Image (cartoon, one colour):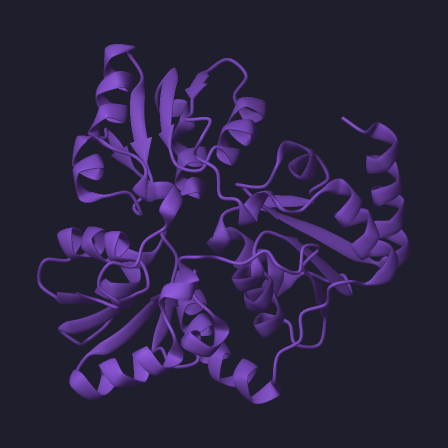
Length: 301
């Protein structure tokens, strides 16, 4: 741990009136520099209520853009400008518009892991933590759900009275797609309770003891003494710090490359220079804000 650098970052935060929001999948040293650590939903909620002038979002682009959409008057910085999301790349706004034409009576629900331009075409946004709740809240019986087809399949299994159409077919997170039943079996043989992300394939979700978002994994950690975490390895560091008396097993190769791009040097540089501030057209932010705020309103009900 670079204690001196963390001290410099702390001082720069005060000077710049900044707050550092960090996703659960970020590297350990970035988590150590965080003011707030959470999953996509937790960071979105926190971003909406911050009082600081500057938000440093340590995650990937769609997260930083979501924070900007919710806080258009604030400076939102993504320290690694090329930190994208291959899952978000599966879905374009044109695909959403075409799907609406093909299914005029359907509602459009987009996972927060999507581009801002795609969100602007949605009726409502969701996260893995609230996807089921969001879909249940809709009056429509047919739902276009994208861009993760595994999450769409999970929602369909939990909301059988609605027809869930994945948009597109086959969209997936390459990290969660790597898990298999062998991981579940290996964990069980060692006496570990398995918990997987809803983005995992159906057979993994069916075999796991628990299905939960990363935020849900934190909330449920007290329920067992040893866990196999079937998600990106970054969550393991946070859980080990929060629950030092418990055992957590992870796959060392379960790595989102984009989530690991931000370094302490980049974080310090962004505080000094203001790079790289997120900029979005005002009209696009206005259109995307509606679907995001409709999701946020559900959290208060």
